[in-house]
Image (cartoon, rainbow, N blue to C red):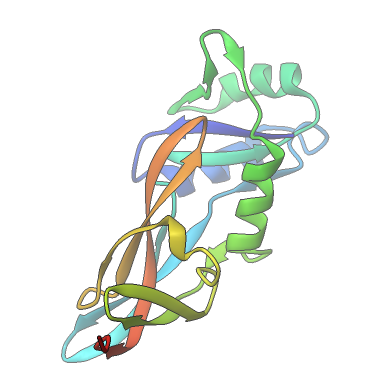
Length: 172
């Protein structure tokens, strides 16, 4: 099962390392910190940078929730396991499938490429292909897209990298 812990934003990598060191391997199968690629321009050139897909969150894969909950007490700066009230809730299969398809084994959402036809976005390649309906907004100049996704039982606005390679005016 996949569980989500909330952490201090900016300390996700340190807390991921702590989880991997302080929680036994038979309790914690894997700790996931999904990233995404974004292009930023500095010194006149475009550079690819990696950023956190869900700032302030880590995904833990474990089959033993009670023991995981107990061993997480050893991890400093871990805020809480996400859930409803006192109940800790695992990610749904749809959420897990989405993360696996979107970020892959590398746990990295690569840059997508697309074009704008009139006022419609068409993704040509990358993880956003086929997900055009989730795109809330695009900033062509910053090469970013914001997706409206249901994660952790609520709507989330998630930032990812996208490069618009062409803009075509729509003929009427």
